[in-house]
Length: 138
View 1: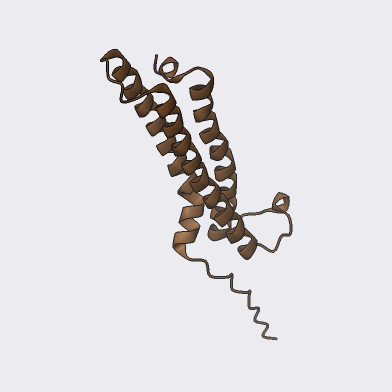
View 2: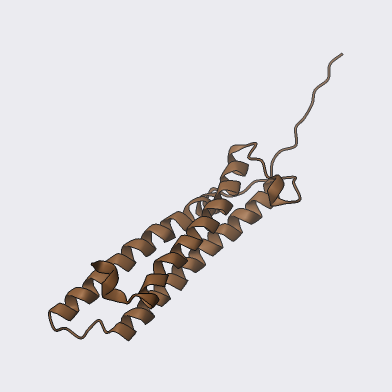
């Protein structure tokens, strides 16, 4: 008896989509933290040196634009990861997700990382509006 089983071939997902979904939010989170700290430092140093380049209102607007822009990148990474996971997985609900293969695991982790680091990006911006810009740098 010669029984050959053919496993269904998983759908092909490009490496770029897979890696952007997996690491897009992490890069956005790191960039948000770096830019947030650097701009706050420059704003506080500018105030000490008498420069009016970095006004409080201008910095809040700039940091808001940066925050929402990078939050959009993290959200896009999460949505791409979720679409990748739906394409690769046979499960109906994400609560039933299993990372049986490398691609499916990367898609599943990309969703989780995007959600958690997206919240982290939002948390970076909260002190600017509650405490002020220079309170963060001290």
